[in-house]
Image 1: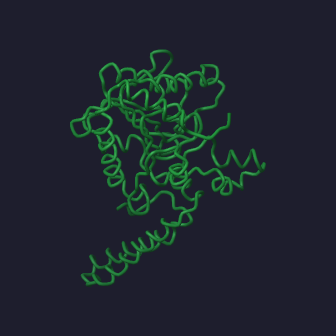
Image 2: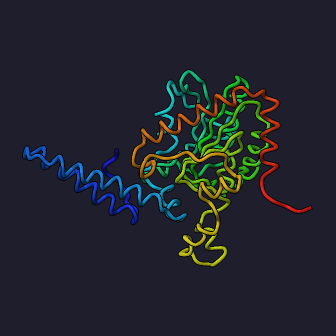
Image 3: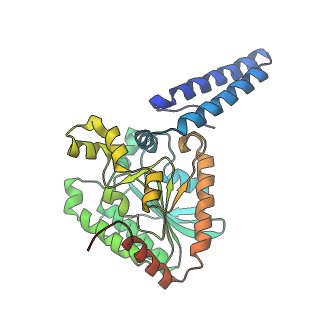
Length: 321
C-alpha cells in the first residue's frame, strides 16, 4: 500500500491522517521495542473500515477528482506492470513524434499485443514534455499507424484512455486535429483485429474518442468519460466554473452511469481506496480483465468483429424518425 501522496483530496484527509498515525506508531514500536501490536491491529482495522466507507459514497465530482489524482497510475505505469518485452514505437511518419501519445508492442502472458494510450507527466517538466496528456494530430496519426501495423501482423490492440482532451492549439488545428481524430474513428471501426478500450483516468471529448472505438469498452470505477469536462459544461450552461460539481452530477459521466446508459460494457474495480493507493494491485486487476476479453475476442472471426463493432455504436443513443 502506498503511504505517502503528493496530493491529498479533502475527503481523503481523515484516511491519510489515520495512516500517518499508524506509521508513527510502527516507527515508535520499532525504535523502542514496545509491543503495540494490538493497538496497531485496531487502528489498521479502523483505517480499512474508514477507507471503504469513504470511497463507497463518492459523488460524481469526487470521482472526477480521483480520475485526475496526480498519484494515479498512468498509461506507462500500467504498461510497465502488465507487459514484458515492451518496445515503444515513435513517430507518425508525417510530421513528428507526440510524447502525449505513447504506443508499442508488448507481451501479456504469452499474448502479443499492441498498446496505445495518452500519457501525462508527474511534474511540471514532464507535463510540459507530455503536454498534460493532450495529443496533437501527430499523436493520433501515430496511434493509427501503429494500429494498422497491428492489423498487418494480426495483433490485438489495447487502448488506454486518459486525457483532458485533444490539444486545441492553433498549430494543432493547422495540422488537421479534427481530420486526424475523424480518420481514427473511421479506421478503427473497420480494423480487422480485436480492440479493447479502457478508460483509466479522464476521458474527455474527441481527444478520448480518437483512440476510443473498440469491440469492448472497459472503465475503471473512479474515472469519468464525457463529451466535455465538468468545468467546461459549467462555463457554458451557467457561466460559472464553480458549478462544476453540479455539472458532474448532471452529465452522468461516471462509470455506473455510463454502464447503465450502454456507453461502456464493464466496470473494472479498483483496489480499496482507488488505483492511486496501490499501482501494482490496480495493474493486476486490469491485466486480469484484459486477458479475459482477449481470450473471448480472439475467437471471433475478423469479419464478425468489424460487423459487431459497427452495430455496437449504431445502437447507442435514442432517436425518433
